[in-house]
Image (cartoon, rainbow, N blue to C red):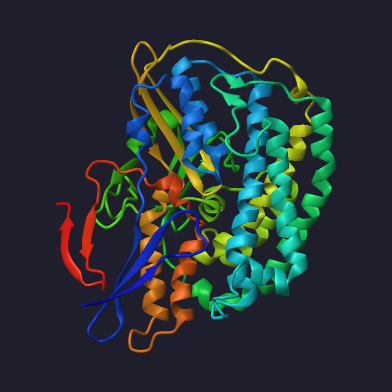
Length: 473
């Protein structure tokens, strides 16, 4: 059996390659996403005081440090067995909404728009953000401005754009000032105008991608996301819900502390990325998805005015459970609108200026779980500590991990449709890579091996000839 290797997948965060396994007939038989980097945060944090975990785990990723900071802090809140002050809860959600805006803007404008604007088969030398700037300067400026707004809000609240230390176990370290609140509010109208304009653009061109919508897999899967008791979308709080591809709610109201009853974790030998699965169905039948598309499929509504209008139109066009992974781009834009509306609502709540923003306590529980929605999907931090508060065990289930099986199934379906092994074109391979980009994977975040680590060491001659090979068993 021959292989085609796409090494590496570009315009994603982290390092990965795609291996296409070809049959004798020149058609794709199987495809695998091989994540080629590994992180060891679960192991090297053992022995550290639990209250250091937010600062340490925020360093997992430079794109979404806020998400890890919040999930970690929620796990620490549980270890302290405290309910954080309400103003602190609102401020954490506000920070998180800003994180969503900047991260989704990065994904849509910087990483995916070259495919959407320049074409899947356009010149790869120009199919990048520089090419977008040259051909569509106004849209490129909008993307830069929208991401800048999100980052500036993070900096205004937390004093740092990357790896802030403002969020801490028990709440946040400083209250919001009226001056900062007013400054953020003054920037919201322009940000919302950009989001609305971009949404109008995308809705106008999405029908041009019917083939991608049909073949960007992975086909019917369950979807998981956080919702409140009434089924509305939640990003910072909420309960985990699983919805089947036919619209049936499989599980609802799952507390963070009970996640392990519903999510199992498998490892494979061809990737450092774990494969979580819906435990009721087992592995590998329990495939499911998380992230923007999955959240809109799991929820009954968003809960803000404009986002709900877009939510309703989206489902009218694509069904109660929209299946195509290409539609992650559409869902991402809806969530930008939702995030901006939530920011405005939170900032206009007088209670957000209250100065009591931190609860303090020691170890009152030897275990804690923090669960939030990161931009890419459900993020879980689970810690165990000893009586002195030192970490004895940690487990992280990161959004891209949840999507691992779906991505592999999606690239297989896309490759079978697009790739002709007897006559390769760069554009057909780019479409397979574009399936991965639709999920906006963050591989720096996600490569946390559980159990046996996949390993392959090759000894090559200066001419590139394979001399020897060692594989883990």
